[in-house]
Image (cartoon, rainbow, N blue to C red; front, side, top):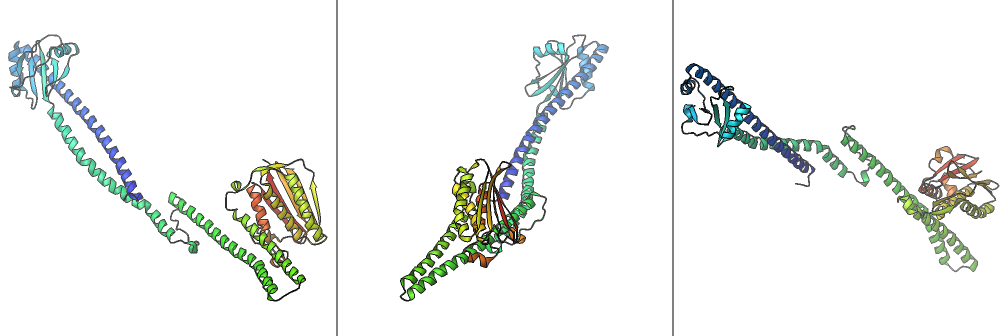
Length: 461
């Protein structure tokens, strides 16, 4: 039961509501008790003043305290209240008929207080008593009016019973309403759960229904749909990656197996064995390069900064070393390779081997697609707080529609020619990943038939 969000929300709601109702009931109870006692005191004082006024009037006519008391109590009736007239010492002079058998003794200190303040209220036993002087200028005595406290206690008792009966009923009804509202509010989440459970790796194209895109659940649904879109793209990319990797690995493996079978088919001369072993060696090297590139790309989904070694790297030396290494390929191809390094010393914190790998991939790509007699230039300079490496060639160029995809894994503009040159379509993808892992960016500007320019910007931190 407590595993349900609806149940937990209802319990929390009921608990908070119960505490609120109890606090409210206690507040109302004590406020009502104060009001009841205040009204009782005012009523008793008013009755005592009425008795005192009537008694004085009769006394002025009869000039007898006892006679005046008889007339007043004969004319006035006081249901549920005890009325008594006492002298200055507290001794009774006259009282109402219902006071028989009831003794109301007023302390002398209260009588002294009444003379000074004009009235007083005191609790005697289970009675609330109001005391006022009969006359403010003559010491004739005092009028006292008493009422049982049970009158107030009875009203408060009824109020308590109402609270004890009403609070649980209100709490029960409110909890039922809270459960209904929680169920109705969480209904879309249950629907989202059912829809999400039906989505699998084979049905990632399905999307959740967005009923109200402006509320929180609608925004959550939109976020889940965006997540599904990214997962669908990731699965498609993974499937495409596996298919392309299988295709790239199939060719060298087929060559290795075929050449081995041919070599073992019959006895051959030493020269023929050497040619077979040379072919096997070349295909093995190509296979090793592909596997190494795949291993590098396998690190791509990881957090790039954590996957790299952070150490001081001199870009001037890295560019010179890579240009010197690529010079061998350029001379073999009949391509001129120039280095333009007129900048001051530039360094950053990063992975030196990865940076060199990125530069060699760009230079190798430029040599492959630059025809004999062409020219390649490498430039290093400082630009707006960044190190800028520019690799420019006069090769075949890249059509504009293909420029956005040349950094995708296994993508090649001319697939047949790329395979003939030994490329697997991974070099530029690795180069971009290395640049982005160093918080930089790589750009391409190419014109078919005139060449390509790759610009790498790396932050100098």
